[in-house]
Length: 380
Image (cartoon, rainbow, N blue to C red; front, side, top):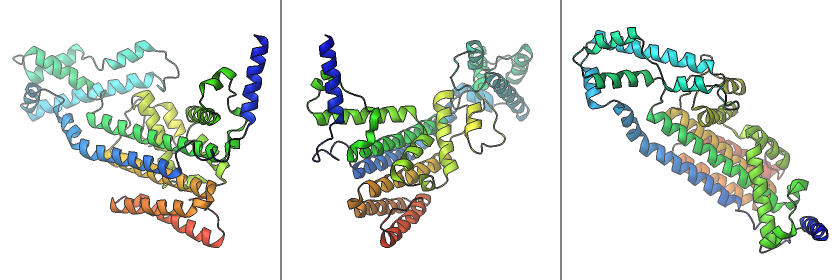
């Protein structure tokens, strides 16, 4: 058994030191053009979903009360509607206080389950509040409807509208598409330059190697594992650091506005890990958070915000792709410039002028640099 283990390790070391054949280099991962189309097509699909679903979802937010509840509220006098608004405000203030006591809410510490469950119940009306509600709705209103109204009003500040859920989900998917692009760029680097995998690549045992049909299959799996580990273990700053080191470029300038881009990642983290509520971590890691934000408040994701985030990630991701394409496949530089121009043109037809201006500015510098020095611009 010991001899077999030694032979297995030796085999793994021997295979990992072999260089792939020239025929296999650049054939194991999608091309830069394919990665770009996947990224752009995904963003276009998410934009179309936003355009088509927004009106329907916004209408759903007007139907959060049943018809009898709406009739009961709409039939109130202006004075009684003002009292109901005051009750809703009190419920919102109660929710903010409760959430603030629960810390930053980034789910690093699973503690304080009692506090969290108390928040999830919303505001429970006091006896005085119940008297106010009875004064508003009268004793002849059906008690079941009154109870539902009181509960729903108490939850208004706790449960976001359907439109917030739609935009928050789309923001999360947009950033997911960007992460896939980053993974594709890293995989392409390893495919074109296998030495870039370095010493951290996993060594395969003899048993594992037997499961692969060829050495090329093992190499492809090594690249896949590396990309997965890289995406899971790092964040935007880490991806930028790697990209700059591998390309010799400075990609922060590829963003239309880097602080806006970075904040979109922080907001996505808050949506995924903290139900969209401001956390202490968000306030610390965001360059310039709004001065009036407080821990526990719901971060909005408006239509304008989502469109701006889409444009930021579109421009930044496209220029990362084109920069790497031109650097790592210099013989394909003309192809890279063609796709940059093509995407700028498509963006112009769609009226995405922030994206157009950024891509056009980079494209102009790319042409000038090629004519003068034959080099890729080092920044945006």
